[in-house]
Image 1 (cartoon, helix red, strand yellow):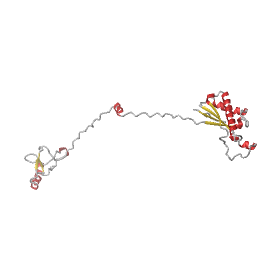
Image 2 (cartoon, helix red, strand yellow):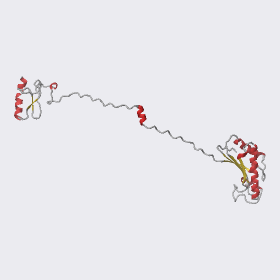
Image 3 (cartoon, helix red, strand yellow):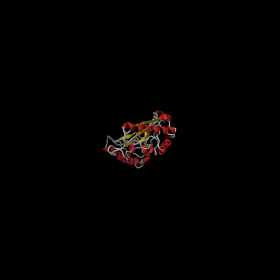
Image 4 (cartoon, helix red, strand yellow):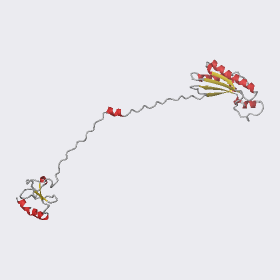
Amino acid sequence: MKTTARFAAAAVAATVLFPAAVMAAPQEANNQGYVIENNGGAIVTSGYGLCWHDSEWTSARAVEPCDLINKPVAAVAPTPVAAVPTAAVIAAAPPSPPPAAVQPVPVKPLPQTIHFSGDALFAFDKAVLKPEGKTMLDGLVRQLDGATYDTILVTGYTDRIGTAAYNQKLSERRAQAVKDYLVSKDVHVGRIEAEGRGKTQPVTNAGDCRGAKSTKVIACLQPDRRVDVQMTGSRTVASSL
């Protein structure tokens, strides 16, 4: 062929320059587009494995190892992941413990004390309830109606005028008079206690109300003359007195 003849001189020159490097590639003679030997039709390569293209070479005629040929890459299927059953996932995780129930702490209410003026309940140096004193105690009875209580303690006090023994007895009689009136209004007698403390716990200070017994001193000592009603229970009553 003309093409073969045209590149024959180039092949010879290559042989002269690289006498030991020129060899025939193991391709067939029908691979057109490369310089081939006249006698065997094999593609001529240099000692570095290079091939020579002729004028008829196209990428469609490319052969290896002279030229790299792009080959389709087989798609690699992803490795299947075994699905974990939902029930297995739930079984693998330990169940969360239920929140601890908050137990209400019982709170015992503080005792509630209502202070009654001794002069409002009784006349001076007396232990008989006055009508206005009974009216005040009626208000207490209305508050106790339907309330839950454990005990009611009635405590009587006097001022410092008079002897300790006399005042002790007077305070006891006044406390008992209040208790008796509450019982007469259907307050449970077994839950009411009455006691007197005489002049042992005055409200006024020692330097107050100086002087002998007089109208002025008696008026000054009025806070000491009192009756306290203390209620203790699961539900105490509110005082409006």
